[in-house]
Length: 551
Image (tube, rainbow, N blue to C red; front, side, top):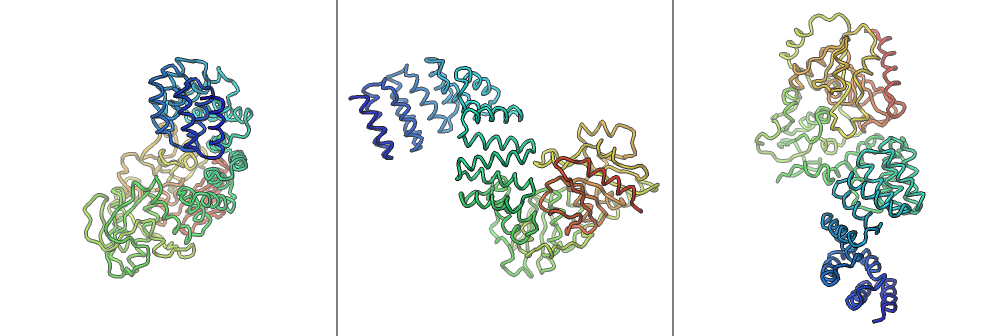
């Protein structure tokens, strides 16, 4: 068999998309002449078209039994194993290949990438460095190295490495895409947008680039463009759930609650929500069936703040004639005893009574046809217990000035915590003397404990706050609550306590855009960042308004 003519034949078959015949031609050639130059590289091109990596791996394993020193075959087998998700096996193959020929830069790069896929990014960096020693101009090695740097939190180094890869090979969509992702992590949204635009210019069908572009535009407050970009991602991939979810949130943020809440139902299909989706034999109620006289199970689904905010819809369901069985998180059980319209109140994981329909709490607005102008905003709709109020009145003693409750941070595990929380020291420095200040937070971060230890007018109660019934009593006894976007802010709003809410530049959807009030809580005032991360301007405004406030 003439290797030159066989390779030409296989190449022609590949060009004609006759992949099976092309692969058979190459296999026959290699069985007869194992050292046919270029045959294994052509095999790689074919299998990338057919995705038949398992079949290739099986054939290569048999081939290597008779050709145990074929370095390229071990490298291709490692590649196939990694494509099959068997990264450890792939690394073993790459090690065999590099033991035969240590100067193979591509093999060294692919070995490092397998380590990265296993989450071993520090070891992967060493591997990429070795590959780049062998081939400094390897653009892919620079780009993959940047991915590992990004995974290790070295954002600036990653951006520099992506830029080096792009300088070497400008037509590399994934390098632009991932550099854009890195820019997003440092809040450089305009630069991220430019990278996503470049990705799309090179690869218009990249749905992920369109979706990420939508997020960057959202942070830049270019909301119509953001929605159009999400729609483009969905048009390219109708099953792109994250893009659908983000588009729903964008509609909510822009005030189209009817459409937003309806589209927000897609959350139950996403990887984040699917594991917590409740399964019942009864019918999901979204408003299609008459509910009067029926037993409706409403269960909480997300954070405590969401539960407090949306519990108002439980009362609306009761007004529609439902006998509402309300299942709540244990920390809210005492507080929710004051909620009107609840027929049966349960803690999560308690046995459920019989019911006819069920509805997740944050789907009630869909069932009730909620629009921006029909939000039930009467406050208070929750109340502190008389017993807790008496206990905390005694503990606080006689007021010597206006009482102001403070909340400066939420859960560190919240995905948006770096935007919504601030340091206690920064808040304390902004507060004018005169009022009595109280911490409404139960737990402190280590970084805030030092600030609290300094002499100040702030009282912190710590473990004396048992659950939300205690926090509710404290909020009720305050003349004002100043809070970042946490569950306590929702609690103060639900109790009707005057509340100043401090918001990041891109707020959560429920706070809408460009307004200082909110249709959710009539006693709440919003203080918004004008620039990303600029708490200084917000706190200066708070200080000015406090100093001028007539109590």
